Every structure is written in C-alpha cells, then in structure tokens.
Amino acid sequence: MVKPSLTLQVPDLSGRFAVVTGANSGLGFGLTKRLAAAGADVVMAIRSRPKGEAAIAEIRREVPAAKLSIRQLDLSSLQSVSALGDQLGAEGRPIDILINNAGIMTPPQRQQTDDGFELQFGANHLGHFALTGRLLPLLRAAESARVVTVSSLAATQGKIEFGDPNAERGYKPMYSYGIAKLAQLMFAVELDRRSRLGGWGLMSNAAHPGLTKTNLLSGASYGREKPTLQARLTRLTWRLLPFMWLDVDEGIKPTLYAAVSPDAEGAKYYGPRGFYETVGGGVTFAGVARLARSETDMTKLWQLSEQLTGVTYLD
Image 1 (cartoon, rainbow, N blue to C red):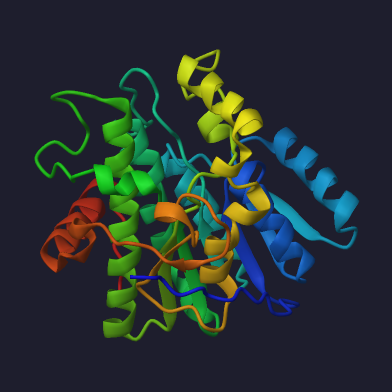
Image 2: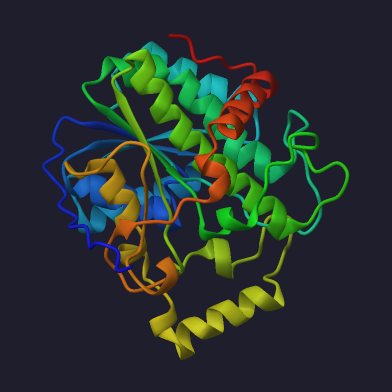
C-alpha cells in the first residue's frame, strides 16, 4: 500500500506563541528556526542557557527578526518542570503550540532522574507528561492549541512494563529507549482522546524524524564522555552513504506538519514518506505501534503517569 504524500504548508504564525523543549540543537533547533521564521514567538525550554544563547545567535543570523526567549527546563526533575509551569502560568500568555521534543537516548548504565525514575522513561515520557499537564490551562486558553510529541521508530521495539516501569529488574539501553518512545506515542494519542471527551479544545498528535542526522545518534550518549563505536560508524555513514539519512531541515517536516498544518489531525502519527519511514523526505502517516492502539494500555499508562508524577489533568 502506497502511503499518501502530505503537503507541508507553514502558515503565517505572527502572534502565535510556541514552546519547544530541547530547542538548542538537532530537531528542536530546526523547529525553532522554522517557527520563528514564520513569525511565531518561541520559548526555548532547555537545560543550558549558554547553549541557548548560542543557538539564538545562530538563528538570528538567518532570521534577524526572530522572537526567541529562553526558559530553563530539566525534564529529569519534576521540580524544574513545575517551576517552568509556574513561570509561564504567571506570565499568563496562552500557548498555541507545544512541541515535546527533548530527549535522552541510551545511557550505557541505568541512571535515575532526580525523582528516582529510570532516566529515559522519566525524562522523555514522564517529564513531558508533567510539563503538558502543568501547561494545560495555558493550552486550553488558546484557540485550537496543538501539542506535538516527538516519538521514534524505536517505539515499535518497546513494550510498557507496567510492573517495572523503572527497569529495576534489568536495564537494556535501547530497549528502555523504545519503551520511553512508545510511552510518548501512547501519551499523544490518549491526550487527544481526553481532549475531545473533555472539550479541552486542543489537538494532540505525534511525529518521528526517521533517520535524521542529529547528535542524539552520532554524539556521546548520555553518561558517556566519547561517542560509542556505533555512534562513530553512524557519523561515517553520513559521509559515505548520505542517501540513508535526512538532513535536519528534512527531518523536522513531520513534526512541523503536525504542529502547524491546517490539514493535520488529532491522534495521528506522522513520519517521513520514504523507505520504511526512514528517509525519502516529505511527510506521510506513520505506522502506529500496536500497543499505542490499545485504549486499555493507554489508560493504564495515563494512570501510572499521574501516580508517578503527581500531575493530574483536571477537566
């Protein structure tokens, strides 16, 4: 079956307010630049202010009028998530676009967040679950807000371990990454369902970048000082086999489509239109992992996430 080619058209975003996590590098940087170029005011929710300031300087070399600001956020700390929610809540500006993009990938050893969660599940999923919940009043105050959660092809490799969500019985870096990315996809679908049932007025969907050239794949993974052999080989294939990889400007297109296209739909999953959703450019509907189609499992994950984070999405 040939998947449809979805046309990405970025409208004028003047006056729109966006929040992008992990905005100083990789996909987040590319998304921030495109949103700012279209006129949006963008909050870069990131851990490192110096890196954010360097990213702003780089963006403004191409987009001199870019309206960008930095808010510090560490998704591995629920206190940091709460602080950002309080800060933006005090400012009171409705949020039109929230892109849950930041991610941690394959620490070699099991690590924990400040709150005792396995790092990948805790930061990638629980951190974004808590952040979205904290920002829900501002999202509901906007007209037709969008929440886009960035998942991964690795979501098909995961299975939520409801009896051991923090990998205390055993930790495998890539498997735990797949679990976290599956959880993010399930969250995106369930958030849209709850929004429709509760009349929250927001659309939630998800996207993945296929095989895109970012430092998440080619740099030193979290907890390592140097890139692994696999990461070094990845960077080598960028040079020798460029057709296997998307540049960031192409890799952001599924997420950008989900965030701004007038034709984007809630509870949908978008990815590159190419060979097994890896490369090829363009945008199409991505294959949704089986577990992300189970209302029972999505409800269980939602309840578990509320229990672990202490964040409840009130109607």
